[in-house]
Image (cartoon, rainbow, N blue to C red; front, side, top):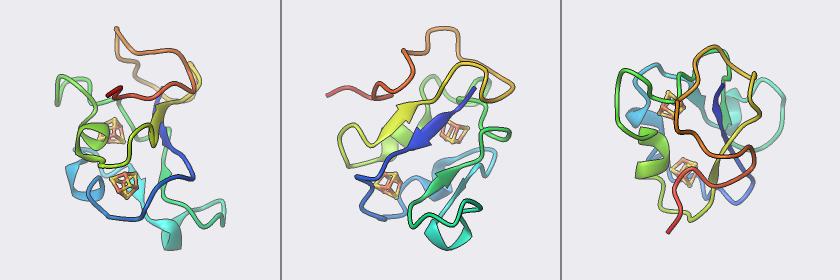
Length: 91
Ligand code: SF4
Ligand code: SF4
């Protein structure tokens, strides 16, 4: 399980240093070649064991930018995670 960064990202870098497992890379390092920031689903642990809530989404200033990815996209799933494609942090 994992979170994902959507294309409304403003490339502010606030999330990069917050990730405890270094799962986030910027657009230059995106393995898909797309010009957006990227979360490695196989690295993201939804902050389980690190933070009460996903630290990247807490740090992100862009409302709705970081969303839950599909169930099964990574290896660790937060128990109270939201539905896929919904914002991790709702304002
Ligand atoms: S949810 Fe946590 S582990 Fe996953 S990318 Fe965000 S900060 Fe990293
Ligand atoms: S904190 Fe949000 S807006 Fe800033 S780079 Fe990360 S995903 Fe993009």
